[in-house]
Each structure stands twice: as structure tokens, then as C-alpha cells.
Length: 173
Image (cartoon, helix red, strand yellow):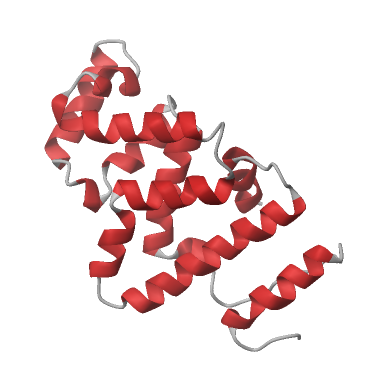
């Protein structure tokens, strides 16, 4: 045991990575299971796998996009019935064009920005960060987002040019 509080892990983790020492972090809390982090992951998966309908659907339901649930379900049904991919179908619909255009921009940016810059851009432009700050317990949620950022930083320390897809694959392990 090297630390007692989750907030103390970042110091030890970065030193272990720097020294190439294998480590395991055990905790009762899995930040990936928290609602706000799941929302961030939905944004990142839609960005990394733009064009994959299964990754776009969770993004459409994010509360800060303020998309009508009935319109979402109708669009999914109409896309299937029309034989089009959901991404292609939504791109031409005014209610969805803002969200789809953002994800397309982020996907394109994922080839030129480093992982940290990309995550920051997605958080700001999507409205995720603003919505997070408006919620009760925003301090706790910000701490979880900070822990998520630390995971991304640690990943980049070991994989200097690591991509969003590679980072998300690592989180799935």
C-alpha cells in the first residue's frame, strides 16, 4: 500500500511509469462507472469511432445536447428502414446537425491533436464541462474528471503518440 486517498495516486503512478515499474491500482471506486465519466466516454467513443452507429446512439441521449428522445428513436428507425447508416441519415437532419458536425470535427482533429488537447476540446465544445459545473456535487465530479485526465496523462507518458482509440482500448482492459 503506497497511498490511502485516491487523490494521492497520481504522484506514485507517474513515478512508477517514469521508472518503467509495473504496478496495479486497486480501489473500491471505479471512476469509469460514474455517470459523468460515462457521458465523457460516450463523447470520446463517438469521436474515435465516427461512423459507427452503435457508438453514436449513446451520444444522442446525452442530456446536454438537449435532443428530443422521440426524434432520436424516430431517426434510428427511419435510418434502418431507409437502408442508410445512422450517421449519414443524421447529418442531413437539422435537429441533429450540430451534434454530428461537432463529432465529425473532433474525429478529424483526433489525427492532429494529442490526446489531452482532444479530450479538452471535446469537453469544452460539447457542453460537457458547462453541464458538469452546473450539477450538484460538481466538485466531486470534477475530481473524477481529473482522475480520468490523469489516466490519459499516464497513458501518454508511456505511449508518446498514443491515439484516442488506443487509450479507449486500454480502458476496456
